[in-house]
Length: 253
Image (cartoon, rainbow, N blue to C red; front, side, top):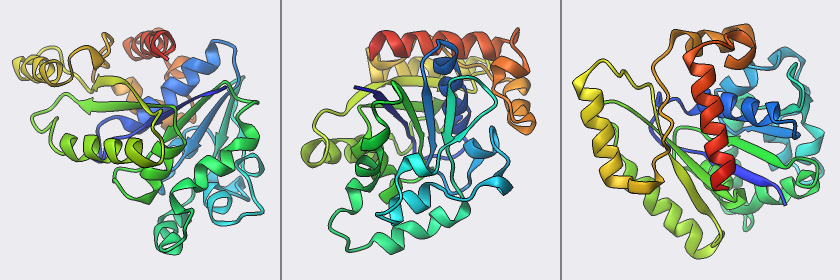
């Protein structure tokens, strides 16, 4: 059975998409077919690997239309073993379309079933909100990874996310596990960042990954070249950190 990792935090700008892009790329580097599902209407994960103008079907079509599965949307990236189920801005309309539908929370899980045997690793990039798209990801996932930015407001809203997770576990997906919390955009030079790191460790304890993702210009630049950090700047700190994070993820899953 495949490992399905939802990467979620309702706060924007916490390195969620950067983590989705580079964790999926690192998993693919280990030689196993990996699928990156872009569930964010901003489509930044998609644009990091695929020319969006060439997309004919997206995750929106798969979730909205019962005759379309995730398999119908998949496009290959330039990286071996890495495929993408792309997003488009139309995904923003999905929540209003699914209101009142009895299976609204289970759409992604159902559409994923036909491809689970083909992809040992599936990574879902969630939007920065706790709406129906994120709930679909949590219902479909086996594991949750929470990126938290190393900043003053790092833990703001965390209670809401944890409450949503417990609600999903109580009814729709009792087997959902919190894989861990990864500290992102960390500036090791400042005492504030060190204080925030210890605060996050105090709240989440052993759930915090040992690997910390540093603030990095290379990580910010790589999506513009439609590359992960591993092909764009393989010798960079970002590449070594995301590779180490991937190894921790595989050990914990």
